[in-house]
Length: 358
Image 1: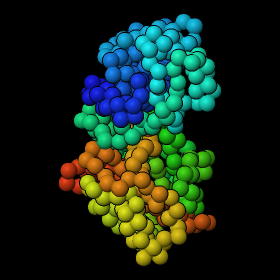
Image 2: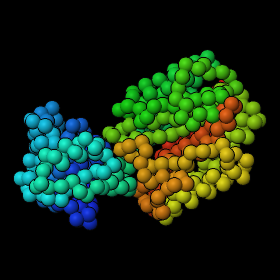
Image 3: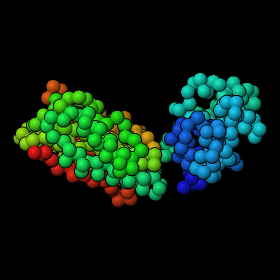
Image 4: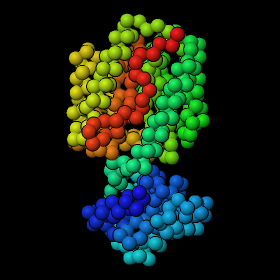
């Protein structure tokens, strides 16, 4: 898999007419080399693949990145990288324009002097949009951990416990099941706080008759999952049932639109129109979804501003419509969906029927 990724990276370099690329974004270091650590640079050309790091990581790098020559630095990461560039005669260097800090850019440029230039800004994240079989397997495992945590949490939630206790239980359960850490700050929003799309958990106590929205994910071998489920503690009112069904219909409609060739804007627009027709369009403000993988938010997006004209097999997207009523509450339902040759495969398989916790 790493060999294939390096081959695509080298094709990308040829297109950009660059002698080599400096990779510094941590998830891209992982993706192109297999190494999982920080304070490291990759230098990749058509002939060379160098991993520059310090003594803390040389043994680890040798094990995790066998296709790379591990270069130890003792006097500074950028100083050692500049030495490698000069020794190989590289003149035109690509760098991660969306990831390298200005201070780092200036420092490396100064060390290179007149012998080479960082003059080809690139975004390497686009090379990660279509996942390979190994990545898909890891993301399916991360999603399965999230599903198991949901099965546990519906037995745990009850009136009188806090949102923060719910978040802690989700995260502890996922850890026990093999998650490295939460995929992001766990969202638990109950009752009136359900109107907050990113309402992270608080000490608020859950009361009977409230919706509880839980948005959370696991990380398995670097790969993220993301799901949202909303349950009702106690019996749901007719108004709650109606609102829940409206969001569920929109969410399932959105999932049905995920297929090769579909555009991010079109899917978002169709679901947004569905909610507008139901009278809730103004209460759905965020984009319909995003991709994920080594990061929790990646391209392509499902949104009004999406640059994705055609989904491709191997891409992932979330489908997560919500309705947020200020001062009253709200809810969201979310699945992670894999684009296949024929449509969309839902990875987050927990039931989406309205669950009443009695």
